[in-house]
Length: 308
Image 1 (cartoon, rainbow, N blue to C red):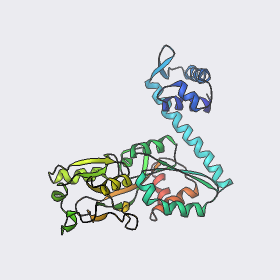
Image 2 (cartoon, rainbow, N blue to C red):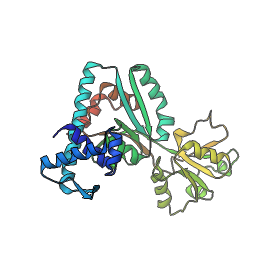
Image 3 (cartoon, helix red, strand yellow):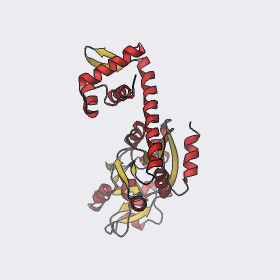
Image 4 (cartoon, helix red, strand yellow):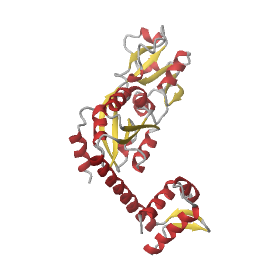
C-alpha cells in the first residue's frame, strides 16, 4: 500500500468513477491506474469498486470506508508538507481562496491588495463559484479557504466562522416612483418586476423568506449571479433590483438610485470556511484577519482545534 494508490483512488471518485479522466488528471496512463487499484484491493482483500466489465459503476460499502481513510491520510500528508514549508519559507508559498462574485468584486479587493503587499512571495489564487461549489472546493482540498454567505454552515466537515453581517438594498433608475415612498414596503416593491440574485446566491433565501412571511408573491422577472448584471438590466428599465448593499457604489452607479431595504429583509452573514483539521500557514491566518479583524489567529486556531 502506498500514497500513490490512495491518490489514484481519490481521483477516480473525484472524477465520477471515470478511470480515463482520473488518469488524465494525474498525468498517467489508464492501465497504470487500474493496475494500482487492483493491487490495493488485493492487499486489502476487498473490492473497493463495483465493476461492469472493465467499467467502474459504483463504490462498495467497504470501499467507502477505505476512501474515507484514504482522504484523511492524503489530507494529513498535505498538512505535513505545509508544516515543512511554514518553517522553511515563512513568506513564500501559495494560498487559494474560493468565493462568490459579490465577495470577490466588492468585499475582497482591499484585502487582496494589502495581503499581496505584505506577502509578495506568496502566490494568491482566487476561484469563483456558487456557495455549493465553494464548499466542495474546500472539502476536496482544491482551495485553502472558502468565503460565501450561503451553504457553508451546512457542511459538518467544515469549520465555519462568521465574518460580518450585511443588508440588501433596492436599486432603481432616477425618478422611479419608489423614490417617492416615505418608507418602502414589500407590498409596494411587489408592484414592479424584480431583478435579483439566483436562488443559491447572495442572501436570496432571505429575500424569499421576507416575501413568504408577508404572504406576498413577488414578480421575479430576471435572476443573475452577478450584481453588475442585475444593475445593468435595472438601468435598461426592465425592473427594480434587489442586491447586496455593498454592491451599490454611488460614484460608479451614477445612473441608479439606492433605497435601503434593511427593514424589509433580514441581514445575511458572510462566513469563512476551512476544512476540519486543516493546517493553515501563518499567512493564511493573516489573510483571514485582514478580511475579518475579529478572527485573530488565536480565535481561528481555537476553532480548528476544537474540531479535532
